[in-house]
Structures are given as C-alpha cells and as structure tokens.
Amino acid sequence: MTATDPNSLLPARPVDPARFTDEDLYRRTRLPVDLASTLIPDAYTSPEFFALEQDRVFTTSWVAVGVVADVDAPGRCLVVEVAGRSIIVTRNRHGQLRGFHNLCRHRATKLLDGDAREVGRHGRIRCPYHSWTYDSDGRCLGTPLFEGSDVPAGQEPIFDTSIATGFDKADYGLLPVTVDSWGLFVFVNLSTDPEPLATSLGDLPQRFADYRLGEWVPQRRRTYEVAANHKLVGENFMEYYHLPWVHPELNQVSRFSDHYRWQGPGRYTGMCTTPVSRNTEAGGWDGLRPLSTLGPQDADSGRFVWLFPSTALVVLPNHAFVLFNRPVAPDRTVETAVLLAHPESMDDPVAEEGVEQLDKFWDLVNRQDLEIVERVQEGLANPAYRGGRMCFRFEEPLHRFQNMVVDKMVGLDRVPAGDRETERSGARPGTTHTMTRMFPDP
Image (cartoon, rainbow, N blue to C red; front, side, top):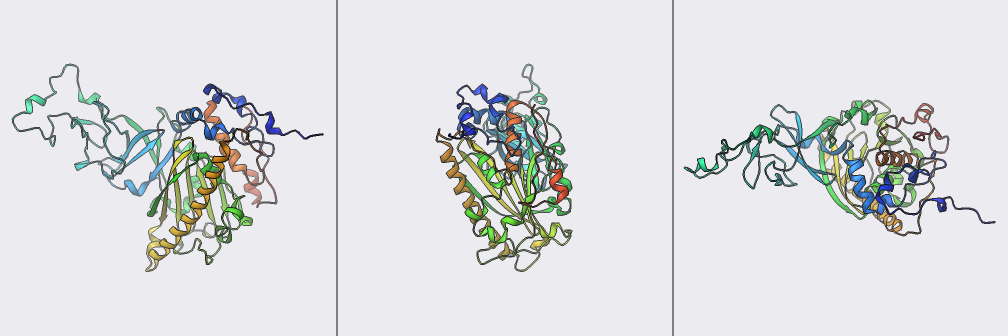
C-alpha cells in the first residue's frame, strides 16, 4: 500500500490572479504548525502573485526603509522605494519626520535621485523640469516666478502664474506619505488610513527598551543583488535549522543548541541565542566593547527579529546588523545591509579594527545565506514541487510569517498573539514547543 503524499492534495497552481485572494487556497498553511504545509510555490514565482502582494502587503504595512541616523537633522533625506513607488523621507525645519511621493505636482517629474541625502538648498525641494519648488512640509512655495528659479531678469511677467484661472498653489503641495520611527528605524506606510506603528510593533519596544536603539549609528553598508524572492530571504533568517550545514563558521559562535524562539504579540518573528559565544579563528561577534547599560540577560544574548514584511534586525550587546530587503520581481530582491554600533562601543582606540572584523564576518554569513536561498528559488521554479511540510520544532516563525502574508492577501487584519507558553517556560529547542493555533480559521 502506497502512503499518500499530503502535498499531492494541494490545488493546482492557479492561473486566475483572483484566486490568490481566496482563503481556501491557503488552507494547508493555515493548519497548526505541526500539521501545516508551506506557502504555495506561486507565492515565490508568479508575477501575478507578486503584483498583488505589492498592493496588498507592501502598500498596507509599516515598511522599515532606513535608519534614523540618516535623517538626523532638518533637510536631511532618504529616497526609498516601497511597492514600486519612490518616496522622500525628510525632516522639516522643526525636526519632525515628513514623507512624500517623489514626484512634482505639475507633470509628475521625479524630484530627487535615489542617492540624494539632502532635499536641496535651504530645505527646498525643486523640480528639475520646470522649477516648481516645495518646502520640507510639502507646501508648494511657488512656480516661476520664484526665488532661485533662474528666470531671466526682465522676463518675470512671462512666468507669473498668479493670474491663472482656478489655480492656487496651496492646492498643489507634495502628495504626503505617512512616516514614523522606532528605535533605529524609519518606517513608511502607504495606506491612506494606517494603523498606529505601535500596533504593528507589538511588544518590541519593551523587549528592546534597554538597548537605546535610537542612538545607534551606521558604521558599514553593503548592497547585494539576490536572485530570489524576498520571502525566501526572510524565511531563511527566521530559522536556525540550517545553521550546521550552511554556516559552519557561524555555528561555532551561534550554536544550534543555544537558540530558542523569542516573540510576543506583534507583526514580527523572533528568536534568540544565549549565551553569546566568543570568536573563533573564523571570526564571530566580538570586536567592539559591549554597551555598559544592558542588564545581565541582554548582555549575554543575541536577538534576531524579522519585522514584517521585509526587514531583518540582529541586536547583540556590542553591535546591530540590519537587512533592508526591497522586492523588485518575483525572483529578485535588492538587499541593503547596515552594520551599526552605539557611540559608547566606538569610544575605543581599536574600535575601527573591530568594525572591520564584524563587517567581514557578517558579509561571509550573508553570502552563505543568499547562495542557499537562490538555490531554493531555482527549485521552486520546478512545477513538480507543490509545497513542503513544516518542521514544527524549528519552523514555527516561518509559519507565523507565512500566515501574516496570507492574512494580507485575503484581506484580514490581525496581529499574531505570540508564544506565551514558550516564553513562560523558557523553553529551548528539543524540550517543548507551542502548539497554540496562532492563526485560527477566519
């Protein structure tokens, strides 16, 4: 008698994009983690799924797009992309965060290039096409005639729009985008009526309260072109099941047996490693002085959090490592890695040497991860694969994440409750696991 493959019961890969919003399509991912199958393969390969995901996930979520230190003064800015839309994040003259769509209200000219770090002279954003100009609160200051518009002397009346019928520049400010910050992160939400950022973060501000994350400063940056879906990057980050085989160097300083889940209510997944092991010849997490104000638990732990939908945060006692993942196609992601440290840790004659060592070690680890997720992407392209079974002991965070994706795709608004049983027991891998149905049937 031949055993039945549970994945053979999955529906065929859909052709109609509307099916991607059908709850029934995800019924096996909705099962408790000890019975669940992975998200459908189309979620990683289909252009139709990708387009819907951009609209239903990335335009309705708080997306971490940069670090607070990059917009630390009026006029400083970030130009970022969310759901294929270019966004300007800056501070006004009072130091308040502001966000705008990166386009002129005249004829939609892109205002700032992607590498812009200042909005412009005197905090003014000027269109390179017809010189319409805006302040850092998004107000339209003027159309030519306007100071600095380079109108030839004596020709001002030709460019005067004050007599235009039915035109008031007050109606033509930049199109606003909601922005906020927490810790070291700047967030963007494209929704017209977004929930508070605090709702999405859940208990993370309390969990990281002693780290003073808002004070951490970038030390190194790298960009990676990844031939894989952004969710694969995230799912790889969320589990330590692969450590012994993919990361022989990392496994020596972040031992498989020292990991456990670390997550409460909020749109994130989390795990922790305790204790923080010392460096080996292959490198590790030493190199900078630890933050002196941490309590005993934080001072001996590494925290690993995936901020839904697309950002990784690693916080250790002496540095932080962040991965901003920007999906650009079903099988392509642009990843920006940022290594940060608190100024206290950098107040040391050998700090630069420590930063170099950490940068090289994280680059090694990240390249190992990206190589393996690209192999997963290649496998997912094979129609023979219809989904796999979750390893409940190690892949509950993936189950949590994938169900957050499903919620957005089918139009449900809810926040995961967390691992309260595991939190109370202080469980480690191999001793217990939570079977709570965190995403009950809708």
